[in-house]
Length: 52
Ligand code: SF4
Image (cartoon, rainbow, N blue to C red; front, side):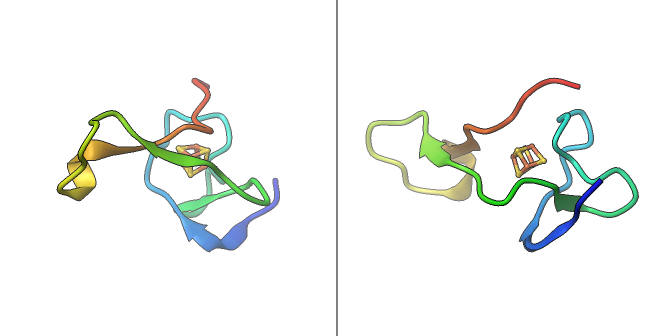
């Protein structure tokens, strides 16, 4: 599996996680917010997540 060293990620339950290292394997990802007025990192999400 490819490792994109520009995208660090610790979400091992995602099928795009690089498994052997804490990186994403995608070329790019989409990040969004689940709050209308995000104020901290907890308000944001990786919208490219897909369950393993
Ligand atoms: S798609 Fe998002 S959640 Fe999944 S491995 Fe990549 S950065 Fe992490």
